[in-house]
Every structure is written in structure tokens, then in C-alpha cells.
Length: 308
Image 1 (cartoon, one colour):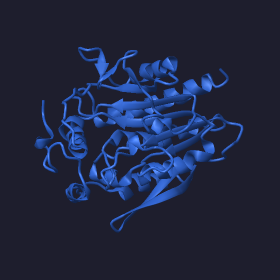
Image 2 (cartoon, rainbow, N blue to C red; image 1 turned 90 degrees about the vertical axis):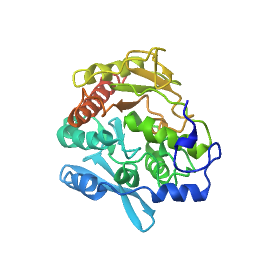
Image 3 (tube, rainbow, N blue to C red; image 1 turned 180 degrees about the vertical axis):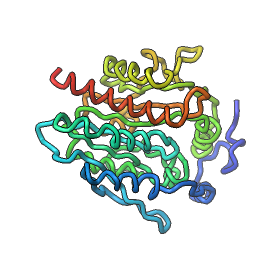
Image 4 (cartoon, rainbow, N blue to C red; image 1 turned 90 degrees about the horizontal axis):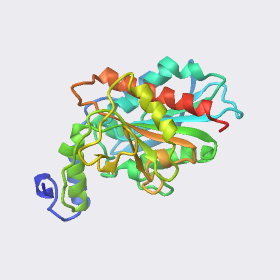
């Protein structure tokens, strides 16, 4: 067992205060460009989609516009399909998978569905390849009214008018080796707890909603992604990241109760993807392709069963 003393910030078993958060924030270095890698590709889509600014984040003199991409010719009689990525800024294929989906397949659903895609929910964290925002808050435990996370609050506000109209929401994530080497130790240190090491699953898996599971929907996505990359096996305890595997490559969380992004709306079909980019069996492009395959399968299934 590893204790929080292995993390370089804070006092073991004492939650962080403002000084520790400031020290953590000072260690975060910009490593890539949201403007070049996200905003610019979105701008290139303006001739095919409607692009809107749904908010802006201001952090220490830096400004990050938050962009949403919608189907052109939005129709109220069509179902709404929601795709979100970059809730955690270090989960790269979520962002680039969403952009690749729009570029290569967004037009496939013209006249069949309204697409709403938010490729990068957390731009500050994207640039720093981090999980948290500058206040050491994880947006993906805070998607609720009155959220302390500006990233989460902006998305909740954007989706509020559509909460009951969205048929499908797929949230694109990754599980990485850095979860065990950095982010979970940092979480334990921040909260004044003991760090209990876990096991990073090698492969793709999904998180269904335990309050309203849709096993056939999840299976359709797993089947599609299996054509692109390998599906994560359960560990020796029959679990994936500490949760029982309910079907090959599928676990369940209480999405709304935990304040997770995929629980924002009342969509019938919801899922969170988890790609493993550190696998020796997967390239970065395969990770992006896996996200695209998941999005396409999710939309296709929801359309085929919309009247069900």
C-alpha cells in the first residue's frame, strides 16, 4: 500500500487548503495548444455545421472560449444525439475522436438526427494534459446545478433546454497509466486519504448507467469497437477499475448521483467510453478510430430503436 506521503504536495492525511492548491497549480505547465489543436479544426467545420460559443473560461489572464458544433438545418422533429469529449483534458482521443467523427461522418446523419458535439469541455486541462481544472476540481464529479467547476457549469447550462429532448449521450474518455502514476495519488493527497493502488485495464471498455442500464446499446458499441481495437478483460476479481463487469467490457456507475457528464440529461441511451492509449497493442490513431466507431454505433443504435 502506498500512502499520500509519496505525493510531493501536502501533508499526509491532511486535505489540501488554498496553499497546496496554489502549489499544485504552479506546477502545471502548458504543453499543447487548444487554439491550434481544437479551435482551428472546429473553425474548418463552419462551412458544414453551425458553431457557437456557449461560454468562456477566464483563468489567470487566459481566456478559453467554449465551442459547440451543431447540425446545420436543426429540426425539432428529429432526435438529438449528444457527443462530449475532453471532460478530462489529458484524455486526448476523446477530443480528437469527436473532431474526427464530425469531419468524416457528421454529414452521414443529415435529415436523420440533430447532432450536438462539444469536443473539448476542459480546455485549460487539455493544454496541460491534466485531469483537473486550475482549482484542482474534477469536472466529472460536478455536472450539476451550482457546480464549482466552470467547465461543468457551462455545459449544464448549454444542455438545460435540451435535457428532455436528447435521445443519446456518449461521453468520450480514456483510462491511462497516468491515472495510477499521477492522478489517483494526487486525488488521495488532495483529499487527505491513503492512496490504494489499482489496476489499469488494457483495452476499451464502457460505463453504463446503473439506474437505467441499456445492455443491448452497450453491446452494440462494444461489437463495433472490437473491429478497431481490443476490449478490456476483467481482472482476477471480475472487475474493471474496481467495479464488477456486468458484460464483456462493460461496468456500471450511478451517473447522476456521481455528477458524471453522461448523467447531465435525461437521455434514454447513455454511455461513457474508456480507451487505453498506453497499450502496446493500440496506436493513437486506433484510439481515435475506436472513439469514432463508438459514436457511430451509439447513434446508429439509438436511431434504430428510437421508437422502442
